[in-house]
Length: 623
Image (cartoon, rainbow, N blue to C red; front, side, top):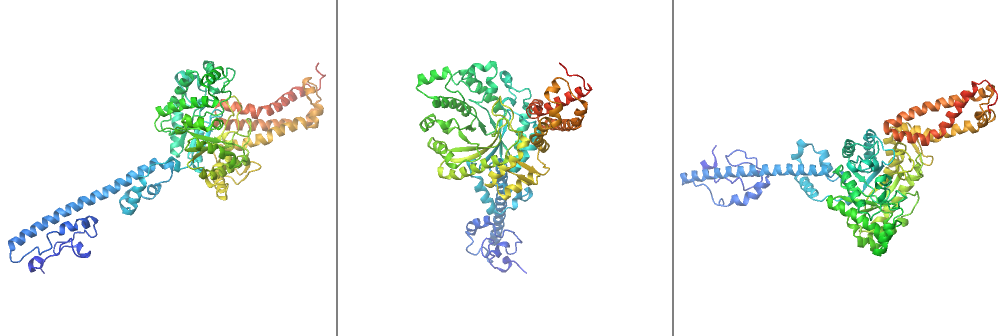
């Protein structure tokens, strides 16, 4: 058997003819180039000059030279193909690595591209079909758009009952599991202010290491951290100090800043700078600015309005512009939020003229259980006309049903979220305004001076119900199942605001113990003091004051009272131990003094007097 060269047959070019012929050259072995797209593009070029026979048996030397040149050409082509193939493969690998990094960076904003990272092991990256690679590259080129993902922030109000970081380590995974993708942290005096601002710190303020740990936990569980710094009203924690009393709008009240004193803005810049220095990962900040009580009542404000022919609204906007100007100049790309209640009172013209719509998004808050979209739409319409491009909504999962509320009413807060869902359905008709996110507020105090509202562990069932209601567009069967499964409960009684089952959520022990305090402590003690006829007849306040009592009659109720006291004291010791695991000592003492001691102290006093008087063995009345 000979080759084409021996027989005088013109050999077929490996770059022409049928697809099968591309796999092998006559007498030159296997090339393995079948179907190569690179060869397809080179085919017209390499075929040039080979349209006539390339070998002539009459001129052996010339034939040899041509054969030699052909072999060299084939070698060159082979090298070109190899280089092109390597470039092609590495390009795809690089593209996928870029995409995976982009997916990692944008995981918080949505699930764009996550499927690649989840289902393609690194060792199999090069096996991804070209069509999928092309699609991925196109997807990667879409810029990250915050508006495309509705954010759900859980508000942590730390101006009361700030939990230890060890408790947040347990809570953050739960928030993520239930559908939150961020936390709005209102530090107030729990932030580790330093230097001249150290006076603002609580004795139990977080350390700088705590702040870093909180952010690491949030990042680990894909929660955006949004710090909240009050910049106008609700600054009692600042203005209560003698050092800053001269910055009050009204001298008697520590609620609000006087915006006309230059030191006010200088102080705010220092506060904001220290907070932002410890939140370099954050892309959002909330400047508060709600409920600026008594604004316009101070003499400086009255003079300003008189000289500038302004009103309270324009004066308010002037201060907000100064705060926004500082933030936008110092922190490029930082997005700003503010509560909207003060904006509701200001005209569209004043809002547009101020230009704040370019730099801040209003957070529309409303905490009532039942309201209609028509009550909120006028505010939204005003914001569209004023130039705002995006708004946020603020609901409440706790802390809005009374300043001393100890037990969270589930039905109340669920209804609030169902009402907000109706408002959300109305947003599309207000285009170009878009909804950017929802803040689920969980107030711990009404202000710096008020008592504590419901503790966070007590309100976790409410938070779970509210989050899942937003995620599912209602408290659906899927939402109910998710709540029960995640919290480890058997059932939830919305109207009774109770949960059946032991539960597995962080702080569940406190939840059950506070339920006992809320439902039975006061009732059982008042029943013993006011309804026990033997006590009313033979151990009244009159008897106790004069240390006058008959042991025979006293013993008829004594064992019952002593047992009640012993049971509650044992219970309270366990409750205190559970509270101390989550809270700092000041919170434990405050909560016990407000919710336990007013009732238990009555029982303690009764037992103290009982033991003292029964030892007297029925002596005469003391005068």
